[in-house]
Image 1 (cartoon, rainbow, N blue to C red):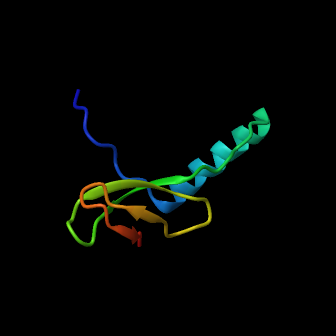
Image 2 (spheres, rainbow, N blue to C red):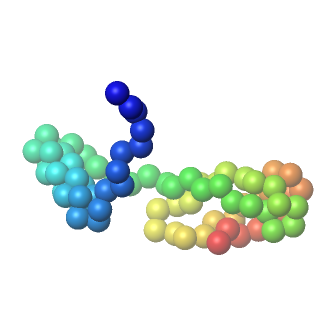
Image 3 (spheres, helix red, strand yellow):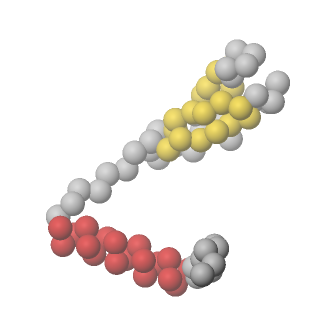
Length: 75
């Protein structure tokens, strides 16, 4: 028996899977909340990588590089 990667799901299969999960959550009366997203960004000066949190509804966040200390805005 081989254990490999599963075949990639089509958009229809992903949509059906998410709809099923939402339906199950509604039946159980679970609360679904959004949380801040976490992103790894690269410094424009030194190239160092820094992990930052981005607030809900925003696409950019200000951060300070951990390597060189330069303040920047993520893309």
